[in-house]
Structures are given as structure tokens and as C-alpha cells.
Length: 280
Image (cartoon, rainbow, N blue to C red):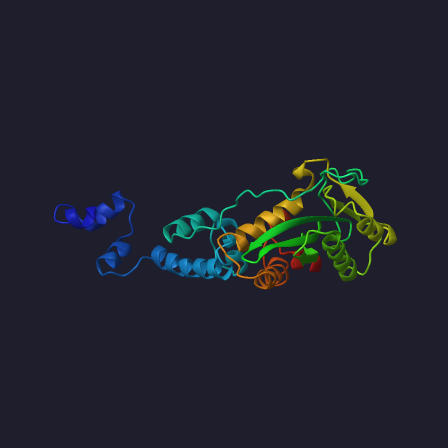
């Protein structure tokens, strides 16, 4: 250190003044006592690591920062990002996945009423639904979900070994039961054959729901559902090798009901959880 190397030539007081350094911090450093900043970083590091592993590597600097502030720990996003880099903590990165939509059919379709307006100011105004698939050593497991666009909550879901109409019918039925059968909800999906089936359309009609469908081959028309599946696969599926479908079902159930709806912050709703958004 410059001060220690030149103290025989210049006074410590003078060098600290010129270098804008704290004299007491210099002497603490000589004694091996960590500075106040270093002490703060050590405390910050412990909390960052605790949150990072609590969320199983799913949180990056923005969500970690929000979580720290909720614990009354003062910090900024850049400082958290720097500490995470030093600690070699990197959030799971997003990847691209194939689409599963089968829109090559002759069934009737609904017009695109939602038209990419994903805003909602109350629950049960707009729901979106979609299907994805999960690989296991036993074969594919198909997952259908229903999302409330107000809170981003997964309010209905269904899993099956077959990609049939019952998959989407069951997920919508769960959403209806959970939300006590609201009327006039706009329910948006892609043009997959399951969503165009007579059984699915019957549920919409009997419950006075308003059907809406994406344009052919346009995944951006159902962006919230696509976003959820990307998040699910990045945070839960990628890098795992499920032995059985039953194992995958259990992990997906835990992720949706115990983590995603109740604990995971969403940037699109001011870093609240779906549960917090609906209880506010």
C-alpha cells in the first residue's frame, strides 16, 4: 500500500489527506481489522447467498435487491450485482423452446379479442391458457395451465400423458372452481386443436366465458403463457432428468402451488407475488 511504503518520507496524516483516505481505516487495515465497508459486504454476502439458494438460483440481481430491501437491508441493484459476480452466483438463464401448437385442423376458431392487451385491473377479467411438454425417462408429460392476467397467478392446471382435449378442459374447470365460476371472463389461447374441441367450447359456452384465440402461428399473441412456460423450464426443468412422470408431476405441483404463486416476485406486477397482488 502506498501509505505504508512511503510513511518514512511523508506523514501518514498528510498522505491520508492527499489521497482522501481515512486515517483510522488505514490503521485498522494495518491491524487486520476489516473496514466498515468490508463488514457491510460480509453481511450483505451472507444475505445474498441465503436468498439465492432459497430460490434455487432463480433470482438475479433485481429480485435479490427487492428481497433484501424487504428485509430492511440497504443496497442498490448494481452493488448486489457486483457482489453476486464476486460470489460467482449467476441466475439461471432463459432459453428458447419449441412450440407445441397444432393449428392444422378444420375446427372453428374464435377471433383475437384480447389482441395483445394483457393489462387487467381486477381478477377474473382476462385469463390465458396454453400447453407445454416436459421430458421424462418414461416419455412426455403434458401440462396445461390457466393464468389470470391481473395477478399472473396460475389458477388452473392439468397434467397428462396424452395431448388430448381433456388436458385443457380440466385446467379450465379447475380455474372455474377456484374462482367460483365468474361470468364474462375473456379466456385466450392459441388455435391448438384441443382449444378448438367441442368439449372445450362447451365449457366456455355453459359458463358464459368469452373465447379469444391468437392469430395462426403467432406466439406473441399469447405472450404471458409463453413467458410462464419459459420461466418454468428455466427454473425447474432445464438441467434435470426426471426418472418418472410421477416425479415430474410432484415437482411441477410444488413449483406452481408452493413457489410460483406464493413466493416468486414478478417484475410485471411491481415485484409482487401473485398471492400478494390478489390480497392487496
